[in-house]
Image (tube, rainbow, N blue to C red; front, side):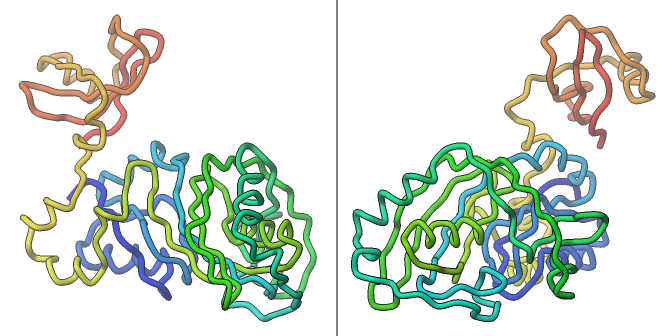
Length: 290
């Protein structure tokens, strides 16, 4: 089984848990394209078999999230699983609908963001959360991110909560964004809920749960309907037909001269999909081979 399955991760499980379960289920190599925190839910594309070789084409995908901020309280982890370390008044002006919309608009565009201490980013060979758990201080360098779009979805004045949708670049920490939004609203806050609804072209509407997968693990027809195979994943790319001799050379790693534009190509032999190749400076080399 080679391709991509879009899993809708449930709350409480780690991305590693999901990978382990699917690997055990099918006895295939399995990877994912971007970690989701245990408390987060939503789109987690799983790469299965030779689909794992597609990871280099997925790591920079933009993402879309729905997030809920709890205003008035700050936690040490910037989410609902942490300990409350600060409380601050949330006044009526803060909860003004137009005020919130205007504040959200200020986050649109390129900017620098400092990742949270409770994250898996490595500094000097150790993950940041390892420093945090030991109470050790460490320098966290800001990184450049981009917010393409952000909008208010719901305002719960009674519970002092804001739900918003954000489309952003790779590397954006929504926990940090929630804290920064709260600060601009003259209070503090933490991320109470998070759902990832889109990763690149992978949508939550097309996702399945791990329970779905377990129930149908022996039904290959059902699985193939849910599986995005490698040929489909590269369906927008042009194709090159290789005759038998050229195919043999190609599969053996020989670069072939092709007068076409640089880029990724689907490779066929007698109309059968073989895999993908990359043309660079008029030379075609093998990439993903089934």
